Length: 392
Image (cartoon, rainbow, N blue to C red; front, side, top):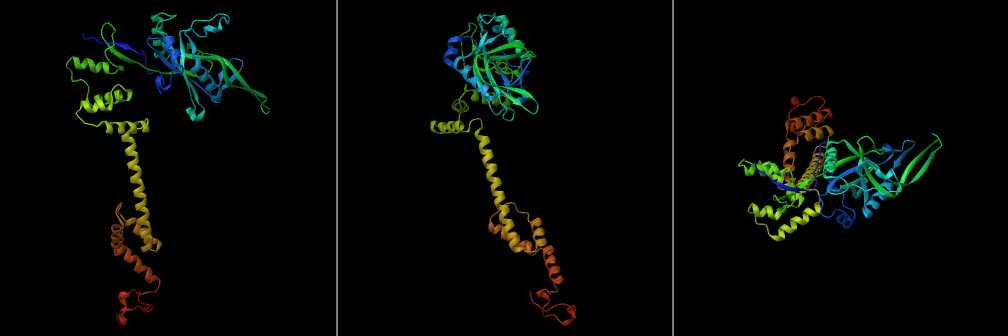
């Protein structure tokens, strides 16, 4: 049996989780304190969200509280400056206010997502558990499996400043949390035992390839590559072209493989200047790829050209076919979708001689008691009694 070894950054990712963001989307707040607290321990991390606004009131049992964006921002600011403890067995700190409880980890980063749910917003908390601490490795791994299975949740605690509003029509008082003052904590609880509308939504894992003794032998890579590595060693066909390209794209996005390395590997000579220019463009575009940007720009230019051509055609048709019915018929018969002025004029000249339009024009003239110029000069037998002798 073939074997491989790796040092895992985190160890869980679950189909039960929302996964609309990654752990790294919530930046670490105070990096120096996080480094001091966790040193070189494996960072077991997950993100939980607390939904804000009047649709997601938190319950204290005797009172409902609306969590505002102002409260969420102050909570995030406090945590990013000084971190906040995580308790593995619920609100352990609530049992005895005079005794400090030893946390299982810390909230290492927080972020207010103002645009979520049409502007109601949500507070995102990045949590890191100790790999070595108060709890054994077995308990930590069990907790990670429980998170993975979607049977755990979080209950956030703090001291709040609140605003109370009295509604005279309903004779009710509403409570709003407007500032998180101190004691920002996160407690892990059963999935249905939290007071606010909160949930664990994402986690991630990568591993660093290492030898049997645990010595690192490569950069962090996605775990999905493990199967492909084994296939290659066993003489299998390995990944398909699509799988290979997808992995290269993922590695490039993660920063473990640069565009220059890819170009060199497949024998494309890209100068440093061109490479730098490409990287600058990619940085300006952010999450949008160069291909997506160019495709959108070309479509926009094509749409603009088509609109301009349609306006030109419409103007020229109206100038030639002044009768409304003739104009509508000519418009329906005009088939060109592109071309210069000369091409448009030539097509309109052809339409002027089309028998349908000529017949419409003749009938219109007869209805006006006019005789087309082709009949002028004929003898009296060709003239109707009411026909005029006006040359068109």
